[in-house]
Length: 84
Image (cartoon, rainbow, N blue to C red; front, side):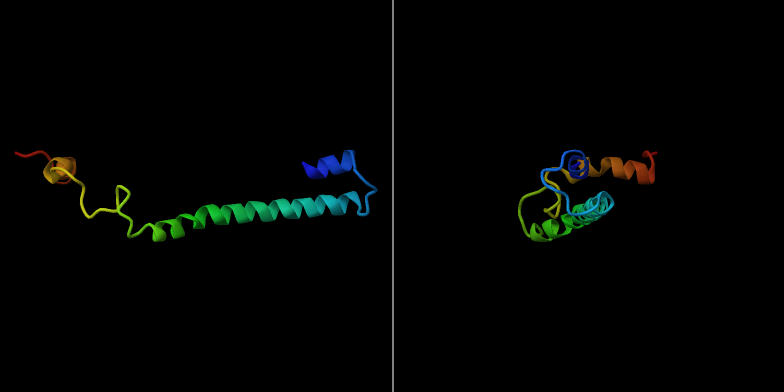
């Protein structure tokens, strides 16, 4: 977007050619896309590691509260089939 604005309405006398400026903007855009993809994929790992010993969260407990037989019934039915 900045490259288009600079090309059509420059705020001062341009020191670089249009091709060089567009190349620089393309390089900056490519670096931003790569950095964003890396950060989005890597950032959950430090977050999970920092919350490992936290008492908050659904999966931070050794077992789910309540009757485990009721919670495990669908799993047993799928693995073993209905009782005969």
